[in-house]
Length: 240
Image (cartoon, rainbow, N blue to C red; front, top):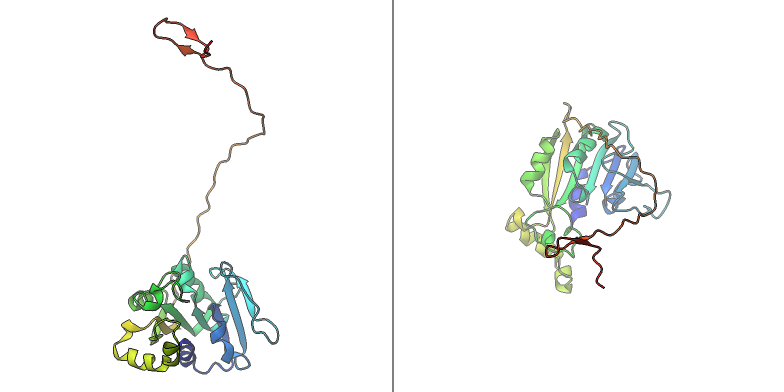
């Protein structure tokens, strides 16, 4: 269900440089052999696996906030399972603006905040930070990306029932009658604007003064005496 929406938003990728960020390999299969170049960047915290199974690997294990790419290196970014697991989504948006070419495309798939898929821990979208449509739009516009097309997907409930799995198309059609609030994920395609984005944060260097210590053995100190208020004398505290 999600792949259909992503492929529709991506359109024709012939001759383009496509980057998949997060766990986007299931949505990059149709770009192989069509796009000029296909890269699959997986965050270090998530781990990486070789992809595709046939031919050389397109996978890169990296920090999504410091991607090993030059400025304006890719034409399209497909980010799936990326924004809900990142610690600083604003810094990620700055890095995406840097690597996307002018007039390039950014496709984002995030779990809907009030969707049932985000409420259950057993679903692929049940971990991390979900988003609302307004939050996602503000994040895009604040970092010089203009949302173009919005899509909703996963109206089918996340239940491992044979009846549900056989009726996925039915749930998708009926769920759309009740509006986007019934969907599980939000899909959006945004266009990079030509004017400069918000500059990246400059991490201030911190200097911590560390004392110079040398290893020493433990010292034995004499036991302190005990003052007796009755006798007005000190004793060693031992009871005879």
